Image (cartoon, rainbow, N blue to C red):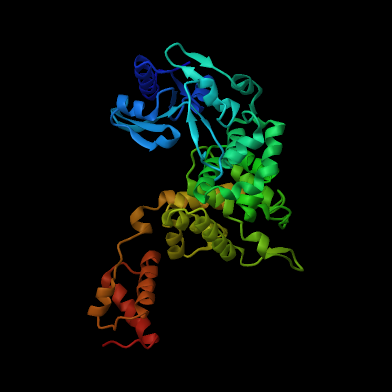
Length: 456
C-alpha cells in the first residue's frame, strides 16, 4: 500500500502523534478505500479515540469546525515536491456513535467512544467503513468492506433504511460511488433508496447540487444518470431531465432515439474532470425540447426550444444556487448550441462575434459531443475549430475604431442610437471593409443621414 505521498505522510504523522499521546488513531473512510484499490486519495481523514479538546491541545492550530460532532481540522502548510505551496487540512474525528437524526443530516446527539468498531457502524457504506493503521499498514475491517470491494458492490452498513434516514444525501452518494467505480448497488440498499427517494428534498439544494456536479464530472456521468433514474431519484432532483424520456426526435437528424437517449450519449462523452459548466451544458442543452414538442405535417418540431431551454436552465441554476458566472456560462451554452448549424454561412462579422464568445472552447466541445450523440457528422465542428485556431485574437476582437466619445466629438447627440451606430462600425471593421477611424466616421455619417439622425 503506497503511503509515500506528502499528504499520506502528513496524515501518518498526525496518527503517530496521537498514538504517542496514548490514543488510538487510524486513517479512515474513503482514503482507506482508495489505498486498498491502489488509487491515490485526494485527501486523508483520521479517526481517533481522542476527544476534540484533546486533539486541539495536541495540535494548537486546529479548527473546531464540528467539535460537537467530534470533528476537528488540522491544517497542513507545506511545499509539495514541485515547490508549490500546498495548503490543506486533515480531518480528525473522534470515535462516536450517533443518536436520532431528526433533520436528516445531523445527529441530535453523539456519544464519543474509545472503540473503533463502534465508530464504523455509523458510517454509510461498507467500502467506506475500513480503517488503516498507517504504521503497520494493517487494514481493520469490521463491516465486510474488503469483500464488497472484491464483489464491486455498494452496500449500506447495517440497516439501509436507517442509514438513509440518518442522512438522505447518502442515497445520492450511493449512486455516485456505484457510477464512479462501476459497481452495483446491493439489492436491499437499492430498494431502500427507491423507498426513500422522495425524501431527498430534506437535503439542502447546495448538497444535492454538489453530488450532481460530481456525478457529471467524475467520468461516468451516463452511468450515474441511468442509476438516478432507476432509483427514482432523477424525478426528484431533476424532473426536467426525467421528462426527456419518450420525447421522440426527427430520425433524419437524430437516428439515436429520443431526447433522453441523446442526452445520455452526450453524458457518456464527458471526460473526467471536465468543467462543471460544460457538464451542465451537455445535460441541459436540449432541456427545452419536451415542453416544445409537436408533430407538424412534415416532421417532429421543437419550436423555440432554445429560448425555452435557456429559461429552464436559468431556473435550474437558480435552484442549484450556482454562481452568477457559472449560471451565465451554462445558459450561454444552451443559448448558442444550435448556432453551429449556420457557421459556414455566417458573415465574417457574425462569425468573429461567435468565435469570441466567452470560453468558446466549451461551446465547441459541446457541439462535438452533440454531433457524436446524433448524426456523427463533425464537418461543422472541424470548420469552426479551424477558424477559431487560425484567426489571431486581434482579428476576432480588434480594438474598436470608434467609441461613444468619438461620436460625441463628431457632433452626435448621446442616446440609444449610439449602440446601433457603434455596432454598425464594428461590423464593417470585422468584415474588413473599413480599417481607419476616418473611414468609420464616414460610414456613421452615411448611416446617420439615411436614418435622419441629426447632429447637434
